[in-house]
Picture 1 (spheres, helix red, strand yellow):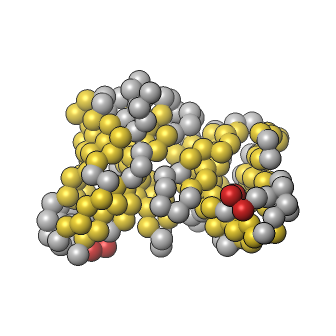
Picture 2 (tube, rainbow over the protein chains, first blue to last red):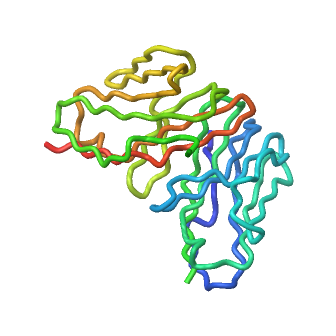
Picture 3 (spheres, rainbow over the protein chains, first blue to last red):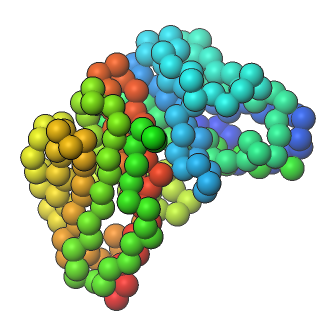
Length: 113
Length: 110
């Protein structure tokens, strides 16, 4: 079985540009998570979905960030406009139920210059 | 108070020693507890999960949970240089939220 698939793996963009990160969860998993990891703040939960519905977006830093899950096999995290402080690794993860192990994608490494 | 806190580290132990990693959490309703290992430049991978009070052993790894004290720990016996990584404690609720601690960097030196 394929794991969680994220794209792009690496992105370098200029401040002010729109960034879209994509995620395909493991088939059959009904929870999807977006995390951001930096040296200073560690692994932060941004938002998570259950059955394509956002359950908790309290970790989304500000209105520049938005996330959608239009169907069970696809989610996006969008940053518009991007800022240098958004530079981080963004991980998508999924699991098959509350309390189950979550599986991470390989991450999207974002650099905003 | 942070939702999940880990001993700050970094932690350095000699090869063959026991490494002890600790984690406390604030939400008494938490029901699932995990330890993940993350190598530099890689994504986190699961080492252990534990759901009830007591100890759970898997090879060289033992997870301990004390819900009354809101405390989770991970012991690594016979530590190897390949165990050198960042260890992340994660705590889950019944409604699916999974929160991670800051991580503890472990170095096992020969």
